[in-house]
Structure formats: C-alpha cells, structure tokens
Length: 150
Image 1: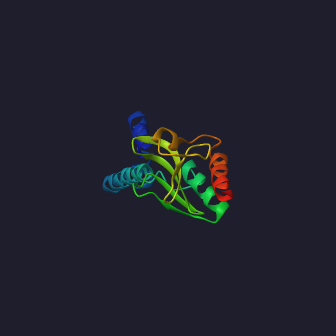
Image 2 (image 1 turned 120 degrees about the horizontal axis):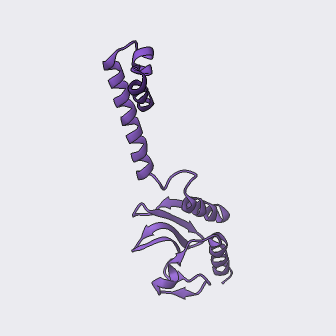
Image 3 (image 1 turned 90 degrees about the vertical axis):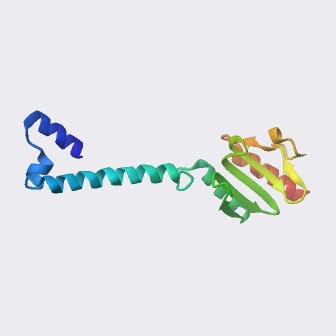
C-alpha cells in the first residue's frame, strides 16, 4: 500500500497517502508504514508456523474424516507434525512428517503391531508407513473395517 504511494511520489513528486490522506505528516506516514510491515511479517510468520491448522490442510481433513466415520478422536501428534486418530482400539497416524518420512499414514492396533496397506500386520517400516494419496481415506477405512471384522 505505501509502496505504491512511494512509487507515485518518485514519478509525480506527490505521495498520496502521506500528503493527501495524512496531511503531509511524515511521522504518521512512517508509523503507518512500519505498522503495515509488522502486520505483514506477523501474518507470514503465523502462516508458516501454523500450517497444520485450518481447512487448507489435507492431512487434517483426512484425520477428521476417519475419526468422524468411527466416532473417534483426533489430536495433534507429539512432534506437532501430523494427527493421531483413535478409533476401535486402532491408532491411525496421518503425518506431515516424522521419522525421516513425509506425508504418510500408519495404522496400528494397540499391543499387536502395525498394518500394511492390505491390512496385514508388519513391522517393516517401508510397508507400515504408507504414502498419502488420493485413495488414502478408502485404504484406511478398508484396513480398519477388516480389523473390526476379525
């Protein structure tokens, strides 16, 4: 906002905000400019720090959808980089990152172990850390439903 006014001043010699709106008060203009810079910086920092909240995060939406299907609960993962869903003695982690991996889910049964994408128990991290993709919700539901049937 003040940048455009500064450019206008270079071209025409008149700073619209300072001269016309603020009556030529340079101190008020400098305060306004500083306030706008600070507000913009704070907004960018909050956006960078809090990327896991809000409707824009697909992993949060996936976690909420799984929890809603089974009446479960969702909490932020201990590392702050994903979500933990508790349903039917099943824990589903929907993670932005963790353990050297990014954008994956992991489903486990308390005390028995973790599942691969086909619902088989496995301790192989390459099989139980499953990449999130367009079919992840259906995959997760199928694994949980198969477990519940057992």
